[in-house]
Length: 135
Image (cartoon, rainbow, N blue to C red):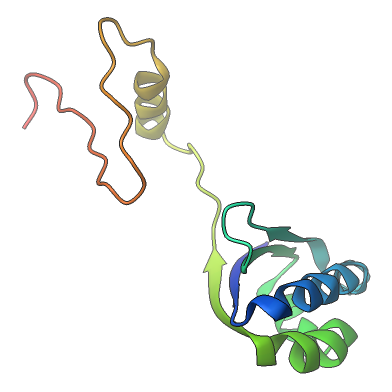
């Protein structure tokens, strides 16, 4: 599998609607392509000028061939690219594949006794407390 996250930032407020419409039209075109496992476009509720594309392809070769397909050539290149800035992130899912990962997940999801620390705001650094007896 080849997973891809694309973060799209619309440059002008008047282009948000046309970009969203073009992305909606792309979805069935992408899903019909050979090797497309899933293709979703999300519109941020907190930042109207931001869209996130989440794609899964059977292989990187399928995704690369997608660049020559109708969705990209007829919609993305002429209607979307001139209106946006984008970040393309080939990605891998985070999974709990080792016993150490599973143990960490269990520890983090265990109930906390006593008062809870306040939640930190966006942009603040989050640190896990160190256990006693570890370096």
